[in-house]
Length: 92
Image (tube, rainbow, N blue to C red; front, side, top):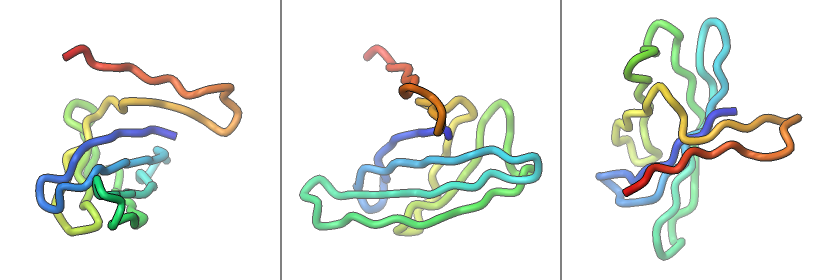
């Protein structure tokens, strides 16, 4: 399972994108929540493999409909059998 976190520029919610890669597609979900927690929802998505770039990643929509660019390299990777979650933090 791959993970990426961002903020949506349209609804201003925090967004978590999680996905698994298959030979012909990516399958996953988008979950969003507002700072005050009044919004907390999500939706599934699928992206055909032909629309995924190894250099730039892929695009999927926030629950509000805003297009979100998801980079090719996930922020974290984990699995059902992994003891933990590997997260690479960016220095700011």
